[in-house]
Length: 331
Image (cartoon, rainbow, N blue to C red; front, side):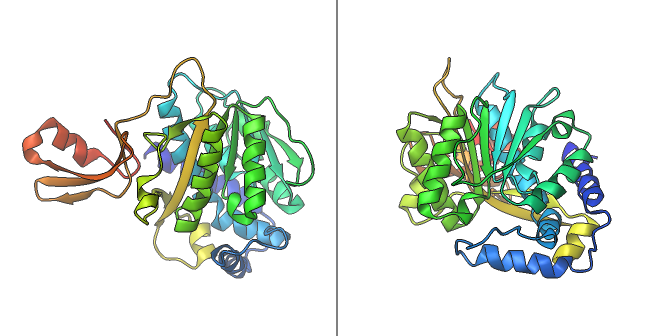
């Protein structure tokens, strides 16, 4: 069994433990309400997770995808920052704790000290129960705080600020404010959004804000130039495989045992002792494998979008290309 499947199983067990005693018959209807709210593209007038049923539906439906996407982005961030490991992390708009779960799982040792900021009392209650059912000391010791974006200052001194699937619930002015708060609270920032054109535009706006403030990009971009995909009317996004548990399938009325969560993200940090280890390119589409040929769509260090054809005659490069996945670095 792979490490990812082990992680998915641990999350499933914790979510089911957190939901124990909650009537699950209404989960599909709750999930449908959340899906309609997220797909509308409108900024919600009230908290999305206002009720216990909303929080339960979110934990069953969205938490696994949030964990998978944030974990994939955090892994690429750590790969670009050799020797960097956050000792503490601040999770904005934490929901039921998905982003914190991903950071704790992706950090070695005992994991970072986690502070989760969330406005929904029901999400906090359920999130505490889910994290308490994990096997992670960092998640057990996590600190939850009731917090709203307009409620004043946030804790500072963290090593990492993360916000996963939060910007899309805010106005443009609020998105800018949240990015600013993340920058003021930590020297490293990770922002994750849905892998849609609108989600990518939000990430690009945050990226521009981070660069203007002197942050350096760690991932996914191999450069700090304008996005070549945006210039061509395309958008940059990646995919994380989510293994659906029985609960997840029931909640979504789905049959497949997996789904691919599409996401966009930016990871950045203030200049440190050494520059980030940026690759020569990043694979920005699913590689196309044909007979004796692999086609890789790359964003390059020169700020260009190119397609690289790697034939079998390339030997080791061809073998490496066959093992390369969407979102991987290409040296």
